Image 1 (cartoon, chains in turn orange, purple, yellow, cyan):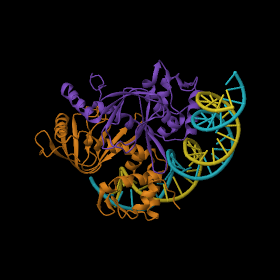
Image 2 (tube, rainbow over the protein chains, first blue to last red):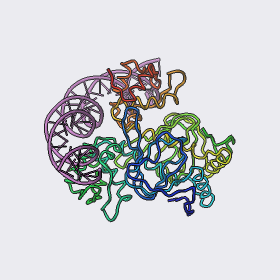
Image 3 (cartoon, each protein chain N blue to C red):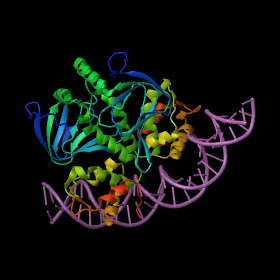
Image 4 (tube, rainbow over the protein chains, first blue to last red):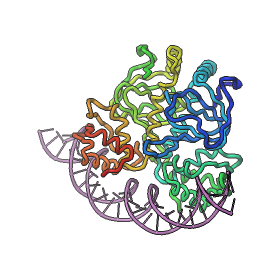
Length: 211
Length: 211
DNA sequence: CGGCCCATTGACAGGCATCAAGTCCGGTGG
DNA sequence: CCACCGGACTTGATGCCTGTCAATGGGCCG
């Protein structure tokens, strides 16, 4: 993963902290900064005029958020957990992108870091069935959140999860209960999740029916 | 919209034709060409291993498809209608991108041409209610397909539409029937659609309930 | 300890998927 | 030119899933 070369952060690229819940940037405002997430989780939120809330993607350490792919940000970025990140000016970010291209001949792969989660979310939401979506999402984040084999920090509320999966919080809760009852996952405590049967999780994510 | 500068197509950038149904590129193969669509409609298809089919986006004249945003294409591109397009080598496409950046200082906006439809589809599919999705989709394509005020060429099958909206073809059909009965649209013949009441269409797309 | 937000659970209704026919249309071949 | 054929569209009946509403429980923080 391209990490904006090895240049240390200078006065233009400030390392920042942010508390959970804090706003990084607002939907519709000018793209003038790129946020490189070093630690924590960020959610990309879209609000319709009627107040419907959707989460277009979750971002994790290593992701870059707010690429000037359009003139304005297309979602609001909020900290889900406490964050550590680097804020790059968009202009400098583009320059770095190009110098990387000259040296390595790879230009766009880094952009994938933001677009890919959004793309995958579209595919997950397009699947039918609450369990399928939940499992597909879990499979896609296990590796990003894993501390050790099968054990993960999981600081997402079911409300956020529901808005990401385009279902209700109640359905989310019931889905998790099923997974717990079938011993596919366990939730020893809030913010923690253990994957007990990853194979079955993947199977369900693929649309297999429960016996 | 950036159209790869004014350079005329040379031996590297071949102008091509394609019949409806023809394959442009296959999901998972190496991104070595960018397709600039001059005329017609292309669908971006994702197949899950179990055969579930989704359409991640429709592309129209002016869009660029297959950007090397990842190492491999993330969907299969098929012609919905007869096409006219230009095939650019990915390497040359990147060079052009950068020379454009030097001259205009705008680098990534052109990329938006492919990513934006995918993003918007995710938001549409994340909405609840068949009618809402249908109307939201129609609103988003009216301007791309309009021949004259409210009259559009509409060569999408309800099957493709259903796979795009993540609903069934039957639900699509019933949704269109409702819109016809309420005189919001009319369908004089196959492949043609007239928007009679765009305001109400937008209203429904926003989640308003029918009286 | 109290309040608040989130998670959980139950009851219920409604929307939509599913299945099954039947119709329409364009294309093909005789 | 016409008959046939296949795929897409249409429509109806049925049942399940899941959204909705309401109430309770539980953990965290002030």
